Image (spheres, rainbow, N blue to C red):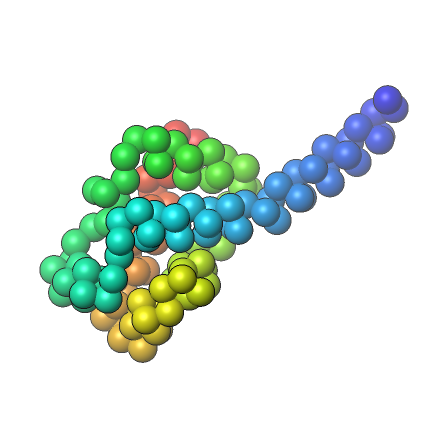
Length: 123
């Protein structure tokens, strides 16, 4: 295969992967909310006590998130809004809580920053 075609296919493949990675990561976040049986009461308690949810991740889950992060040029998509969008269908009450309670929004923002730091350690 000519090198210009390989280069074009490589770029297109990377673009597709980069475009899909936020959706893949969002699916992982939603899956974790289901596995952990997260509800409004848990989120309220976590916000009030500033509990970190990262401690609930096992090594396999951290590795999955790192694998997705490795596909990305950056993790700028990881925002409070991205979290809300990832969970709003299955967890509408929690999404609403985050959007409408400033302390919850701040807490989620801190969780997102901690997640970014954790999954980029190996980069």
